[in-house]
Length: 110
Length: 262
Image (cartoon, rainbow over all chains, first blue to last red):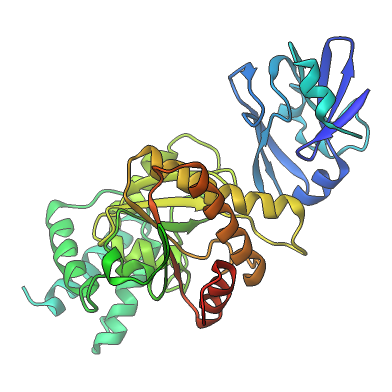
């Protein structure tokens, strides 16, 4: 099941929630040149997940939902342009677990 | 030491630095005051965040103290209050003797390097003195560029304001998108949060993002007023807010947004 919040998609697969960029956000920020993940793994909604340096802005990506970061797309550190890919197998940022189900339900349907 | 001697000392010192560092040959000293002032500001603007001799700093501070006082400083009580906790005033924000003024920074966060550029970042750094860029560098050291919508604080040095709160507002590329609106609101909120956390009594906002960053003035005024008034409602201990607008057009827009009679 896929939802959206704060210009990001959140896709639920069992207990793992994958955060990726919406096409609107991709268009708005331009080509991503650098990705720097934040160290904190336990995030509240609004906490920064990563800093992106893109052609049209430098941006902290806020967590659309609280949870625990269980996986980071570390491929982005060598190939940040993957974030501009239309393929959501490529353009994801982090995977979260321990997400509050009801908070997820409150997000808009994608 | 007279102002003219101080000015020439500062010019020669920085020209010497540039020669030592990069073999830049010094320009001839202009004979008139305006020419010298432009050359001095250019050298300030181009100067990297390096320390200088105690003598340089002392002479610079004396020089700036006199230059910055050309027009009287203004405190909160000199400004028109338009609502509880909100003041609206048109003029040069660098004259304000308040706890903090907001600097519309770029993501490098080191101040404007373009010689004699007309942006507020340039003016704030020129009037504060070389210490401000050094302080910028200290807070940015080892970090990648500053994200849009955040805020950082430094002392104001030779400015009448105690602190400068630096925020990078959104740049408008082709059009105003929902993300860019949110980021402008983030900038205002981040500045308020930082000022409140520091226990400041008042904060003076410029019109963030409306200069070089091309955010349309009417939209920006709406977002500024709404974000700040919402914040004040939720935070009774927040600092007082001064909207220090530069142009008569912005003054009219803010009056409209604040519901103030013309």
